Length: 257
Image (tube, rainbow, N blue to C red; front, side, top):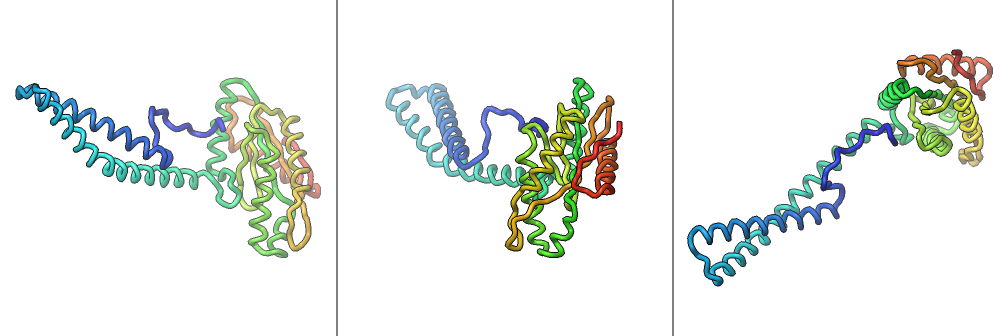
């Protein structure tokens, strides 16, 4: 997604074991080439320019790096790959809610603020949806927390499958989710909310031998003003969600302008 931090562009990257092999071959080739240059320079300096001396010197200059460079480079590059993978996993865990595989609240709000800043600069509208699964506590009470976790994961996957490619979904906490929709005014966001409500209601999750769907209340807000803060949008969406709950749930409410 365009909100994500991009990796620094480099001419060579160590991403997997195949890259380790390629890098090992490259290091070996550079080592051999460097050994040739040094050997030839020394031979010329000491006056050993006979073809036999030069051939012998180049053979030694080739065998020495071939014996040392590949195993050393391979081990070092493998260690680099392990460190890169560990860093990548730590970075992922700091952003992702492990249960639902959506962005966690902190990272989602950071992304929302960045998008709102871009929207203010370039003059487009961003909408925010706050989604609450109605009476979800009953799932945990009747089916147990493992079933509840499965249901949350299914609902998250359903929301991800309903939104556009440029939209972003995050877990607000508990059974609440957030959707950030760039280039969507209030009416477009309301239609998106209704699509999500319908998709959740027809999610067809099997629980306790029954196929069930989930009702949801959704508060929708858009950034009509410049320099809008993510926290302000969230507060307005929360008030709209509260109205939806007060009116019986299973509905979408739009935030007041």
